[in-house]
Image (cartoon, helix red, strand yellow):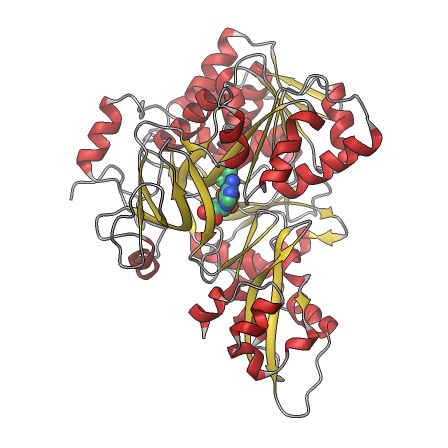
Amino acid sequence: MASTTTTEGVVPWPTDLAAQYREAGYWKDELLTAPIWRMAARRPDDIALVDGETRIGYAEMCRRADALGARLRELGFETDDRVVVQLPNTWEFVIFTLGCLRAGIIPVMALPAHRRHELEYLAEHSEAVAMVVPDILRDFDHQALAKAIRDAVPSVRDIIVLGDAHADAIDLRGLCALPADHEDPAATLDALPISPDAVALFLLSGGTTGLPKLIPRSHNDYRYNAEVANEAARFDDSTNYLVTLPASHNFPLACPGLLGTFLAGGTVVMLQSPEPSRAFATIEAQRVTHVAAVPAVVQRWIDYEEAERTGQLATLRVVQVGGSRLVDELAARVKPVLGATLQQVFGMAEGLLNMTRLDDPEPIVIGTQGRPVSPGDMVRIVDEDGDPVPLGGRGVLHTQGPYTLRGYYKAADHNKRSFAPDGWYITGDIVELREDGNLVVQGRDKDLINRAGEKISGEEVENLLYRHPGIEMNAAVAIPDPALGERVCVYATLREGVQIELDDLRRLMRDAGVAGSIVTLLCDRGARYRETLYDPAWLAARGIDPSPWKSKL
Ligand code: OOB
């Protein structure tokens, strides 16, 4: 089959579909950054980016990004080189990302919670030449960890640090500095032959089994992702968009997120935490109009506003909520309490985006997760035998479309399970497709735990726990949690005479260097006996869905 891209390990779209996507105008055969740079030429002084006291106009943002891209090239970075990015929500994150896109260098978007276990794997699997990290953040020494990974992974050559860079690391702020007057980094980068079908960046899968998979997103597809999301969320040049979820996640990055905001000519406001008092103060001070949040954050915001009656949210027009299921009761409180229109977003780093529309009637906005944003999105719902489910029934959602991947990067075996023989992506989400075309997420048929939108692989947790010599058998499942939606619960049978406390497991996870959220395990001490593993009635009596057990045992 002829290919639309030639990067090794990347599965191309079939040529007939690629031709359709071009013809329909979804793929514009331009770099993702091109329209943003045109925006900078048209309105150079409009504010593009705000981070605390720092305010950066469109022209300055693009000049800094170009300078960074050219400096990386001078340092020896080449087209198609990969860099693992783990940065907090700062203006430097934006400059770094845009600079890489301009220079054909591919960011691998790690999440802030990731630790050695995940980062080392990402660096190895992507054959990264560099890592970019903060020095110390929330008491964790990221710079030291990056160096340990450099020692362990032969491809990693450079460490780039936001903050206090050691002598053998590169200072990120220096890379972001404005170019000297005589320099013309834009011309250098404009001359680079970068294909719009090339991988622009790698996103991470929500860890279906094992460690996260890498999702290649091309310039053509990711730009369309942000543009078509802009239409559904109606971002325009009056949008002031607050980034408070981790900026490297697809939702705040491009759904429409910060990239959509730049494409629309709006202003992006970076904030490192969704903590209500800081978020609300920022919304008021920066006249924020749009924000994306996960249900757990929306719950905190609603509780805070109800208790404090801050009156700080007057400018807020739209609150997008996604990442995990928003329960109807909470959905119904968004508009009355926060005073903004709710937009439910059921999306995935793999591609397909569903959104309720801003003018949908209330029952749709509150009771569904919306419908695909592009006319090019194709969805089907199938039963356990792979047969189509009639309208109104529920089953596993399959999809293909102009911004949905055709395969994870270098994961041939896994791809056999995650894609139907005709190339459609098997989302693993169990949904109901209503007659009006909207989807309702009912559950999932994949082994992951969705902890406040963060996806944790059950199998990965289990494998790590087997490092404990006292554990004979274990299973990690999701249990309901009022604040997080779900949290990790581990059931274990122990070898004769062994005693294990929750703290022992936490220590084991921390020593294994896994993401912080996985360390916070809930271990039900009453469930340490083999018979409970096999007794669905015992689980049901405690309100635990036994279905993940069936698939595991
Ligand atoms: C977003 O992306 P990921 O890649 O972290 O996770 C995708 C998975 C989906 O397959 C689904 O299982 C779950 O997260 N999910 C939802 C949901 N939105 C995502 N489950 C129920 N209701 C929703 N509204 O989470 C993501 C990517 C782009 C935009 C929004 C979310």
